[in-house]
Length: 463
Image 1 (cartoon, helix red, strand yellow):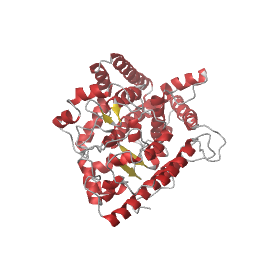
Image 2 (cartoon, rainbow, N blue to C red; image 1 turned 180 degrees about the horizontal axis):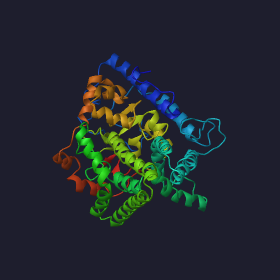
Image 3 (cartoon, rainbow, N blue to C red; image 1 turned 45 degrees about the horizontal axis):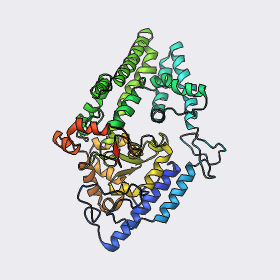
Image 4 (cartoon, rainbow, N blue to C red; image 1 turned 60 degrees about the vertical axis):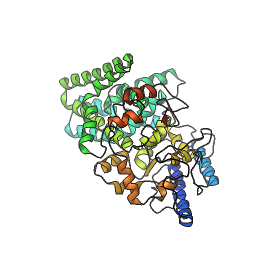
C-alpha cells in the first residue's frame, strides 16, 4: 500500500476497492520509475504541455488516452476490481449490497432493491416534521436549540438526497399514483425545514449550474475569483446569500428562458413571504424551524461549491476533468450519496450515485490522461478551509496521484500545482479559453447534452 494513502474502515465498499486499486498503481509506478528513471515532464511522449490527451471514446477508459506510458497498470487486476464493484451494485448478484442506512452496509439483507431514500424520508417525517409542529404548539428554547441541532445533522444528507431527486425526477418508484404524488409533494414540506426554498435548488443547480458548468455565465462560477483569498470567498458567498432571489431570475431572462425566470422568482419570493408571515405570527419557533436552517443552508451550499470548483486547471478550465475534483472520503460518499465523485457527476448528471466509483475505475485511463485531481480523507468543507488558509502542503498530502506525471511529483511540486489551480482568471483569459467570452461560451455550452454529459460538452470538454 502506498505509504501516503490511508483507507478509513468507514468508507463504502466500492471506495475501498477503488482506493486500494489507485494505491497499488502508485506503488507499481514508483517501482517502474526507480528502475527506468523519471518520465518526461509532460507525463507522456506525444502530449503537448498543458494539452488534453486524445481519447478513444469507444474504449472502456483503461489506456484510452493515447500517448500515456502507464505500463504499471494491471488490466487483470482492474477487471477483477470492476467485476467486484459491479456485483455490489447488481441486484441479480449474490454479492449485491442494498443501501438501507447511510452509516452501515447490509450484505445479508434479503431485499433486492435500494431503500435508503425511504429510510431517510421515514426519519424526517418522524422527527423533523413533528418536532417543528410541536414547537409551534408549545415552544421552549431548549427544544428549539435541540431541533436546530438535529436539522444541522440532517442538512448534508438531506440536500444530497434532494440532489438525487432533482436530477432523477424523484427518488421513489413510479408504479403507484399515490407514491408518485407523495414523491412530488414531500419537498414542499421538508425543503423549508432543511433550509431550502421551494424549487430554487432545482432551477439553480439543474437548469443553471449544469448548463454553464462553472463557465463564465455560471452565477456560482469560481473563475473570476482568487480562490485562496478570503475576501473573494466572502464576496462569492455573499452574492448568492443575499441576491440569488434576483440574480437567478435575471439570468434566465438573459438566456431567453423567461418561464424559468418567472417560476424561480415566484417560488423564491413566495417562500420568503411565507416565512415572514409565520415570523409575524409566532417569531420564536419560526426562527428555529425556518430562519436558522435557511441561513445555514445558504452559506453551506456556496462553501461546498467553492470546494468543488476551487481547483481549476489554468490551461483547460472548460474541461470537467480539470474544473472539478473527486473525493474518496467518508462524509461525502458514506453519508451523502457519493457526492465526492463530482467530476463523474458533471460528466453525466443523471448517473446513479452508486455507479460513480465504477465509472471512475472503468475510465481511470482518461482521468489520468486529463490530470484530474483526486483526494482522499478530506471533504469539500475542509478543502475550502485549507485552501483559504493556504495549506497546500496538507492538500498535497491528501492528493491521490494518478498517472505518471502526478505520481512522479514531489510533495512540494504537488503543492505548487494545487496553488497554481487557485489563480483568478482575467477577462482576457476567459475570452480566449471559452471561445468568445461568457456569452459565446454559454451559447455553446447551453445547447444540450451529448453522449450522456451535460453542458453541451463531449468527453468533458466544451465543443
